[in-house]
Length: 141
Image 1: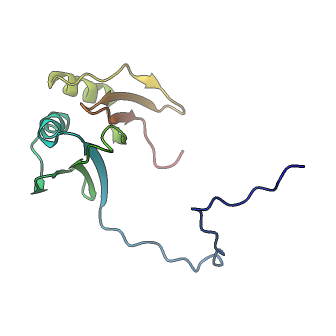
Image 2: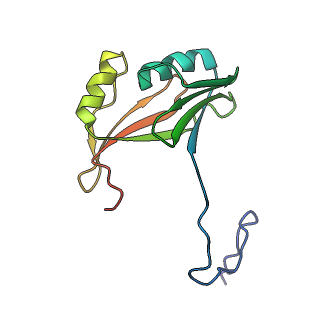
C-alpha cells in the first residue's frame, strides 16, 4: 500500500482568500543579488558587463548597478553562495549586445533558439554565476 503524500515540513498550508480580496504587494524596486567570492574581481568584471562603473557602493561588501528604472543588480561578497545565481537580462538586439560585450572582452556562448522566437546567449562570471541575455522576450506569449 502506498502512503498518501504529505506536505513537506517547510511548506505552510493555508486557505486561499476568495477572489478579489488579495491586495498586490507594493514594490518600488527589484534587486537581483549576485553572490561572489572576491568583491574587487567581481566589481571589475561587472563594470565590463554593464559598461560603466557601479551606481552605488554602500559598503565594502556590496556594489550596485541600476539596470532599469526600478531594477538593480547587487553584487555581494558571500563566498559560501558564490556561483549559485542565474541572472537574466532581456535585450532588444541580442546580436548587438553580444558584439558590444565581445568588444569589452566578454564573449557570450553561442546564441541558442529557445521557444516561440526567444533566443538566448550566456556567460559565467568569475565565480560561475550564470548571466543570460534573452532576445525576443515578451511580457505575454
